[in-house]
Amino acid sequence: MSDLLEGIEEEIARRARIIDDPSYDPGPKLDKNDLIGAIILAVVCAIGIALGYILM
Image (cartoon, rainbow, N blue to C red; front, top):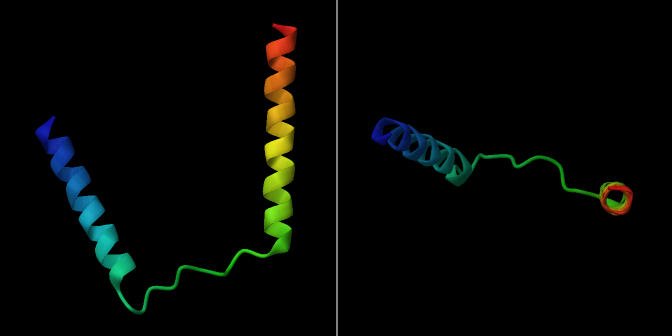
């Protein structure tokens, strides 16, 4: 189990170094269309959960 934890800690440290690098590019900013898509997805998921709860 400790080998697994060591591997996880090493991977976290590696990714932290990548993110802390000044030349790191986080990608494009989210725009209005992304927000609308996320809201629609959340509404569809909520409807699905409600229907599943009602029909069970």
